[in-house]
Length: 194
Image 1 (tube, helix red, strand yellow):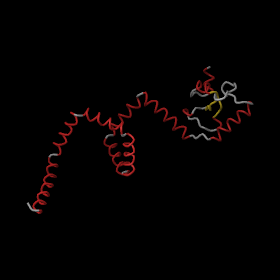
Image 2 (cartoon, one colour; image 1 turned 90 degrees about the vertical axis):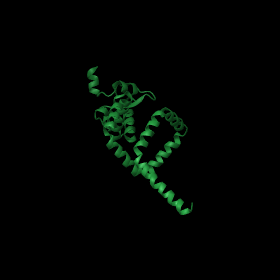
Image 3 (cartoon, one colour; image 1 turned 135 degrees about the horizontal axis):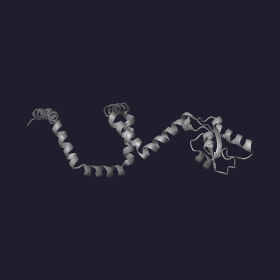
Image 4 (cartoon, helix red, strand yellow; image 1 turned 180 degrees about the vertical axis):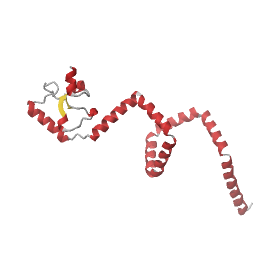
């Protein structure tokens, strides 16, 4: 067999191979799904072991790929979200109803509120200085007793959860225990209940 014949044979083989793959794509995918289902446990164990061994490498590779293929990644995530919107919402709803989801939601809401209403070091320093000027020593605004070292905390007169701000006029120094007892109640309502 000469070179031209061999080259023509290879070209025909590639052409027929492409046609065969297109025709048998569905059959092949069904076969692979069936094979995967039969060997799912085996694949899962092998993947978990491999992931544990190479976890850092996998994470760095994924980050690098996302950076290099940013447009492609964003396009893919957007398409996936649009195609699976109801499924994703169901997962989110289920997660937010779990204890971990409720806790995470509460923490995120609190962090968001405090980020919006910034508390600066200047305000805190002024608050401590004014408390010492007024009482002579660091004193709790809730129970009017002296605060020991490490027992102090900053209390919001109107809590952040009830649209209180981090402005100087809304802040006061209190014992940590007094602050925890007060929780997220407003001062006037706290005294009314007692």
